[in-house]
Amino acid sequence: MAEAFFYHLERLTLDEVLPGLVERTLARGWRALIRTETAERAQAIDTLLWTWNEESFLPHAQTGDGDASRQPVLITTEAENANRAHVLFLVGGAMPASWGGETAQYARIVVLFDGRDPSAISAAGTAWTAAREAGHEATLWRQSSGGKWEKQSWAAQ
Image 1: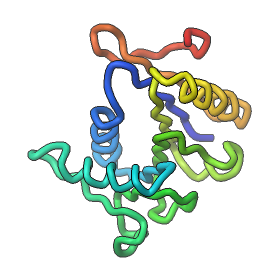
Image 2: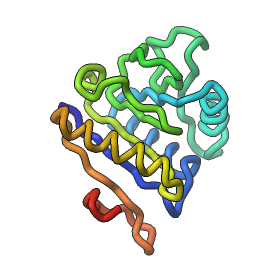
Image 3: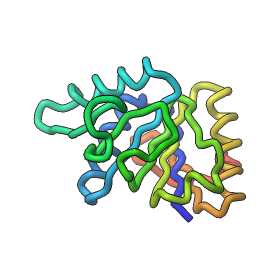
């Protein structure tokens, strides 16, 4: 089963966290699939990855932009793993249809959720439970007051 990392975004925003995680994914030689809940958010992430750091380049495309299977990073609203990604990033409330089937093809699943939004916390909690019940090794990451990411227990929510 996959590792499932849940990032509780409280001090930093998705725009501040996602590009660095994607960059580290590529540095490992892995491919990434970023699944969003809407086409509008997919477009915003596409723009973010083009502009986030002038000294770095994150090769990526959205579904429909060329051959998806050749993309190291693919941004989509669809469930298909069209670029054979090792890591699935779930943002903006996007979740797999089933934590038991679809997610088995990934080495890692990363759920980024807004820790200031009670409905996002609730949805992430439901996903956390489903991931663990499906046999995934789930860990929760929350930023300390000093800015360091630390493992937390879900009960601390």
